[in-house]
Amino acid sequence: MKTFLMTVLLMIAPAIQAAVHKTHWGMVDGKSVDLYTISSPVLSISVTNFGAHIVSIEAPDKNGVRADVVLGFKDLNGYQKDTKTYMGSVVGRYGNRIAKGTFAIDGNVYHVPANDHGQALHGGTIGFDRKVWSATVIPSGVELTLISPDGDMSFPGTLTAHVRYTLESSSLRIEYTATTDKPTVVNLTNHSYFNLAGKNSGTVLDQQLMLNADRYTPIDAVLIPTGELALVGGTPFDFRQSHPIGERIQARDEQLKLAGGYDHNFVLNGEGLRLAAKAFDPRSGRSLTVTTTEPGVQFYSGNFLDGSVLDGDGRPYEEYAGFCLETQHFPDSPNEAKFPTTILRPEQKLHSITIFAFGVQK
Ligand code: GAL
Image 1 (cartoon, protein in one colour):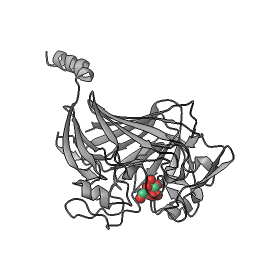
Image 2: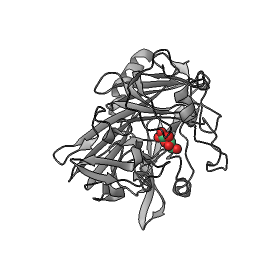
Image 3: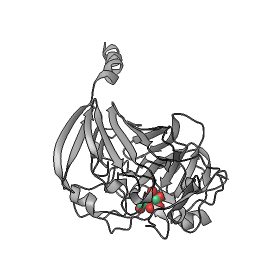
Image 4: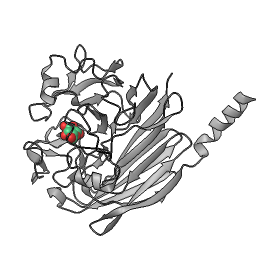
């Protein structure tokens, strides 16, 4: 009988809509900023239309005890003050780096403000993470929309971007769409820092990671890809089998030294919506499975967290306090003809899906 009931429950579970609850969070530039909490029986996620940030993800451990597994802040002020970590935001118009902020499309040269050691990072000085998006509640989630004008941070074309966050049982689905009225470049991703033991529970060095990637893109001293697609075999970048994040992070390896840990784009095997990564915390039993349609994932081990950014309760976020799995097109693609293109033309529509599925393993 019990098994029968369980089977029925599992069959109807996808049909059960997650509840969406909206609360007012504050005002920015005369626009209302709200917090949307999306809850299923298993997971509770909150997102805000300021920077399209994921603010919290409450997930159960192996004993059913919930914890917030993403780093973040308690209030809007925390997100406004923090301009370094991009904690939980959607980064754009071009997530990750563009060398010297300079690129060309059809012979026209563009210069995005360089905000990171002479390079453009996450869309320049005022990226999508700083913008108030408009929001619409949709079944089991929220759709956020941003119209980035022609010339925004020097990018050409008016870009209309939508991000849909929806919750199905224990999975958060993020769907990005975008259109433009002039040829432009786009790379959108979510910049959540995960700590499967719960935020502020120490470092993630003991948490295990698997990446579905035979190759990665090595970087130079300013973290711009050299253009090479290097094999991971025999290096600390081989995560094809699961390894604790900290196991090889101090290895004598030029690439790890350049970034102070992992901060590299991995070239995902396969195409279409497929497995990108699996993470597991042996202490809590929580697991995270990432699937995506994107060609790459930036695995960043939180090397630049240095205790200077505090959470809402005044506790510092220290080095390696969280890891990011930023599903994306490769960094500096506008300047690397052999990388998958990030050019979007008026007759095209960008469509990208990433799913973060949470679970437990005993
Ligand atoms: C990551 C990037 C890091 C660092 C971080 C923000 O996406 O790979 O190098 O800039 O964002 O602090």
